[in-house]
Image (cartoon, rainbow, N blue to C red; front, side, top):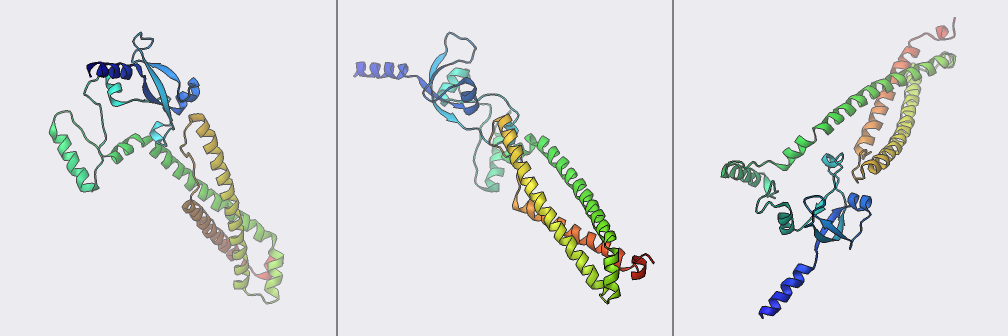
Length: 268
């Protein structure tokens, strides 16, 4: 029995441990599942462990990790402890709770258990590490507001130019008995159709631009994170804003037209 235990222990010691590596490390170092590598906490150490790559882990979609260029290796807990020399210590760990009440209770108990313990909600940590993205989001909102205002002015100018080109046609319609409301309705409908066509083209350009941005930056950072998305809510908001601005531009342009007497529109 003693000999059998010794043989099993020697066999277990002879079999290399397994690790999982980051897909970026696998691509850069040209490693694959089943390869043997040397693992050590000190570069070029003579006591490095021979390990087998058992899995290649795909990168997550955490925005806080996009700009980080380090590689990641996953080990068994006892292997990590012996490699790092930490013993039975950890820097941080995650605890899953059920409900807000349980989370608040766990925070209170952990923070009051001993000096040096500090517990935080995961969402608070996410907010703290994503301040840069919040600034970028506000910057994008400012750009969006400026773009909407500029497009509204541009659309109004287009409608005014189109109305000025049709002064004689409108004057002729007014002289044969067409009412002001009918003229205004025609101009507003034309402006609404123009706004819908423009919004459709804008959605198409935005979707194509979003695909290009994701393709480019996913290749640069080698991450599956979506840097740009076009959601149904964004499309709905864009089309609604375009339609409202188009109708408003049509009303303003038509009011300027129908308030002018027909003979003045003819230039007399």
